[in-house]
View 1 (cartoon, rainbow, N blue to C red):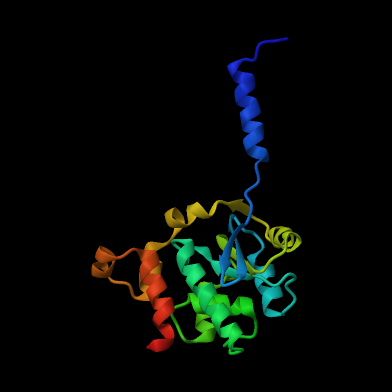
View 2: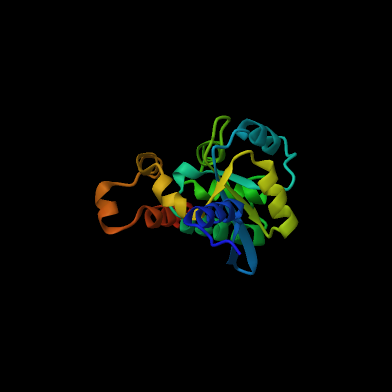
Length: 194
């Protein structure tokens, strides 16, 4: 038997890491699940947007502008709110997944919310979200997107803090006592009360 060299061990480790697949993360919310996957270098956002607007996206999924998301927590708050309005049969938008994008926004204006917090023709950094996804649906969502899936932990480092502060009107003093994610979550929770 030939002794293993450092080079052969390193090569085997690199191959093993390259074969590792990042899976969608699944979160439990009020007896439902929300599956999230983060993608960078997305090249087909225009096609995704066109399919979504035509109602031909299969499976149905929410695509969010990931540069406005510093953490998963505000997305989960928006998902919770979405499930509550669904249970009351009072969706503001046409679908459950567009309602998630709408609820993530700090605005009460549907079109503005979907444009700002959803994807655009040239989005390259996208968070995909699907309620109650089966394993096959999760694979189908991954196949829809031409991009590289990355870990959700990348959200904080890639968030556009200046754009988030501008969109949600978050001030410097507020960030002195709170995190960006907490400030967004407060706005999501309080939007309908204002």
